[in-house]
Length: 169
Image (cartoon, rainbow, N blue to C red; front, side, top):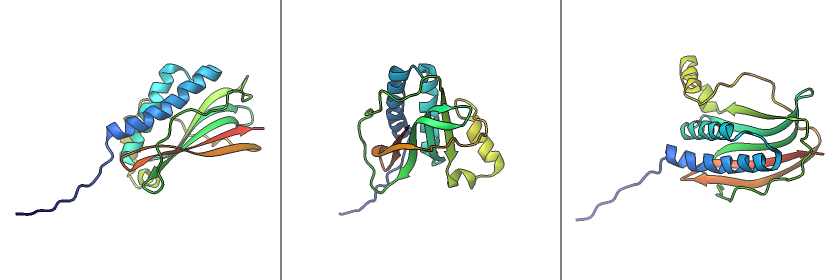
Protein backbone atom coordinates (compact mmCIF):
# COMPACT_ATOMS: atom_id res chain seq x y z
CA UNK A 1 0.00 0.00 0.00
CA UNK A 2 1.39 3.38 -0.94
CA UNK A 3 0.16 6.84 -0.37
CA UNK A 4 1.16 10.37 -0.98
CA UNK A 5 0.41 13.50 0.88
CA UNK A 6 1.22 17.16 0.57
CA UNK A 7 2.34 19.24 3.47
CA UNK A 8 1.54 22.89 3.27
CA UNK A 9 3.51 25.25 5.41
CA UNK A 10 1.55 27.79 7.35
CA UNK A 11 2.94 30.84 9.05
CA UNK A 12 1.86 30.68 12.69
CA UNK A 13 1.91 33.16 15.55
CA UNK A 14 4.97 31.27 16.84
CA UNK A 15 6.75 31.92 13.54
CA UNK A 16 5.65 35.56 13.58
CA UNK A 17 6.86 36.03 17.17
CA UNK A 18 10.23 34.54 16.20
CA UNK A 19 10.59 37.20 13.50
CA UNK A 20 9.22 39.88 15.84
CA UNK A 21 11.77 38.90 18.50
CA UNK A 22 14.57 39.65 16.05
CA UNK A 23 13.07 43.08 15.37
CA UNK A 24 12.91 43.46 19.16
CA UNK A 25 16.61 42.61 19.44
CA UNK A 26 17.40 45.45 17.03
CA UNK A 27 15.21 47.80 19.08
CA UNK A 28 16.94 46.75 22.32
CA UNK A 29 20.25 47.56 20.65
CA UNK A 30 18.88 51.03 19.79
CA UNK A 31 17.88 51.34 23.45
CA UNK A 32 21.41 50.40 24.53
CA UNK A 33 23.05 52.87 22.12
CA UNK A 34 20.64 55.82 22.35
CA UNK A 35 18.42 55.26 25.41
CA UNK A 36 15.19 54.78 23.44
CA UNK A 37 12.74 53.17 22.86
CA UNK A 38 11.78 52.08 26.35
CA UNK A 39 11.95 48.37 27.10
CA UNK A 40 8.18 48.28 27.75
CA UNK A 41 7.51 49.89 24.37
CA UNK A 42 9.77 47.36 22.66
CA UNK A 43 7.61 44.49 23.90
CA UNK A 44 4.53 46.16 22.44
CA UNK A 45 6.27 46.83 19.10
CA UNK A 46 7.32 43.17 18.92
CA UNK A 47 3.77 41.95 19.52
CA UNK A 48 2.36 44.42 16.98
CA UNK A 49 4.78 43.15 14.31
CA UNK A 50 3.98 39.52 15.15
CA UNK A 51 0.19 39.97 14.98
CA UNK A 52 0.23 41.93 11.73
CA UNK A 53 2.84 39.71 10.08
CA UNK A 54 0.98 36.52 11.01
CA UNK A 55 -2.17 37.70 9.25
CA UNK A 56 -0.44 39.34 6.29
CA UNK A 57 -1.51 42.85 7.28
CA UNK A 58 1.94 44.42 7.66
CA UNK A 59 3.55 46.28 4.77
CA UNK A 60 6.31 48.32 6.45
CA UNK A 61 7.14 49.52 9.91
CA UNK A 62 9.80 52.13 10.71
CA UNK A 63 11.52 52.80 14.02
CA UNK A 64 14.05 55.48 14.72
CA UNK A 65 14.74 59.08 15.52
CA UNK A 66 13.32 62.03 13.66
CA UNK A 67 13.39 65.77 13.78
CA UNK A 68 9.80 66.38 14.88
CA UNK A 69 9.75 69.96 13.55
CA UNK A 70 10.70 69.02 9.98
CA UNK A 71 9.40 65.40 10.13
CA UNK A 72 12.71 64.10 8.76
CA UNK A 73 14.39 60.87 9.83
CA UNK A 74 17.84 61.09 11.40
CA UNK A 75 18.10 57.32 11.93
CA UNK A 76 15.52 54.84 10.67
CA UNK A 77 15.18 51.07 10.74
CA UNK A 78 12.61 50.02 8.12
CA UNK A 79 11.18 46.51 8.12
CA UNK A 80 9.26 45.37 5.03
CA UNK A 81 7.10 42.26 5.19
CA UNK A 82 8.11 39.63 2.65
CA UNK A 83 6.72 36.29 1.53
CA UNK A 84 8.71 33.57 -0.23
CA UNK A 85 11.43 34.61 -2.63
CA UNK A 86 14.88 35.31 -1.30
CA UNK A 87 14.19 35.22 2.42
CA UNK A 88 17.14 35.27 4.76
CA UNK A 89 17.23 34.78 8.48
CA UNK A 90 20.15 36.79 9.73
CA UNK A 91 21.39 37.80 13.13
CA UNK A 92 20.06 41.04 14.61
CA UNK A 93 22.47 43.90 15.11
CA UNK A 94 25.02 45.71 12.95
CA UNK A 95 23.39 49.06 13.70
CA UNK A 96 25.16 52.43 13.66
CA UNK A 97 26.48 53.45 17.07
CA UNK A 98 27.17 57.11 16.47
CA UNK A 99 24.20 58.50 14.56
CA UNK A 100 23.45 62.13 15.38
CA UNK A 101 20.13 61.65 17.18
CA UNK A 102 20.70 63.80 20.25
CA UNK A 103 17.71 66.07 20.82
CA UNK A 104 15.50 64.10 18.42
CA UNK A 105 12.50 62.06 19.45
CA UNK A 106 12.03 58.34 18.97
CA UNK A 107 9.27 57.62 16.47
CA UNK A 108 7.56 54.71 14.75
CA UNK A 109 5.56 54.74 11.53
CA UNK A 110 3.59 51.78 10.16
CA UNK A 111 1.90 51.04 6.85
CA UNK A 112 -0.61 48.27 6.25
CA UNK A 113 -0.61 45.78 3.39
CA UNK A 114 -3.05 45.56 0.49
CA UNK A 115 -4.58 42.52 2.22
CA UNK A 116 -5.47 44.76 5.18
CA UNK A 117 -7.05 47.36 2.92
CA UNK A 118 -9.14 44.63 1.25
CA UNK A 119 -10.91 44.11 4.60
CA UNK A 120 -14.16 45.89 5.38
CA UNK A 121 -14.01 48.93 7.63
CA UNK A 122 -15.38 46.89 10.54
CA UNK A 123 -12.76 44.18 9.99
CA UNK A 124 -9.96 46.77 9.87
CA UNK A 125 -11.22 48.25 13.14
CA UNK A 126 -11.25 44.80 14.75
CA UNK A 127 -7.63 44.16 13.65
CA UNK A 128 -6.49 47.53 15.01
CA UNK A 129 -8.31 47.00 18.32
CA UNK A 130 -6.48 43.67 18.80
CA UNK A 131 -3.09 45.39 18.61
CA UNK A 132 -1.21 46.26 21.82
CA UNK A 133 -1.54 50.03 21.34
CA UNK A 134 -3.41 52.44 19.04
CA UNK A 135 -1.71 54.28 16.22
CA UNK A 136 -2.82 57.66 14.94
CA UNK A 137 -2.79 58.73 11.32
CA UNK A 138 0.17 60.95 10.43
CA UNK A 139 2.32 62.00 7.51
CA UNK A 140 5.25 59.70 6.85
CA UNK A 141 8.61 61.21 7.85
CA UNK A 142 10.94 61.78 4.93
CA UNK A 143 14.51 60.64 4.44
CA UNK A 144 16.24 63.46 2.61
CA UNK A 145 19.99 63.11 2.45
CA UNK A 146 21.76 60.13 3.92
CA UNK A 147 22.96 56.60 3.45
CA UNK A 148 20.88 53.47 3.34
CA UNK A 149 22.03 49.92 3.99
CA UNK A 150 19.85 46.98 2.98
CA UNK A 151 20.35 43.25 2.92
CA UNK A 152 19.49 42.13 6.43
CA UNK A 153 16.40 40.00 6.93
CA UNK A 154 14.62 37.85 9.47
CA UNK A 155 12.39 34.98 8.38
CA UNK A 156 10.81 31.72 9.34
CA UNK A 157 8.56 29.24 7.57
CA UNK A 158 8.18 31.23 4.34
CA UNK A 159 7.57 34.74 5.66
CA UNK A 160 9.52 37.48 7.36
CA UNK A 161 10.88 40.98 7.02
CA UNK A 162 13.76 42.65 5.25
CA UNK A 163 15.55 45.46 7.05
CA UNK A 164 16.90 48.72 5.67
CA UNK A 165 18.90 51.12 7.86
CA UNK A 166 18.93 54.81 6.94
CA UNK A 167 21.27 57.34 8.56
CA UNK A 168 21.01 61.05 7.72
CA UNK A 169 24.18 62.87 6.73
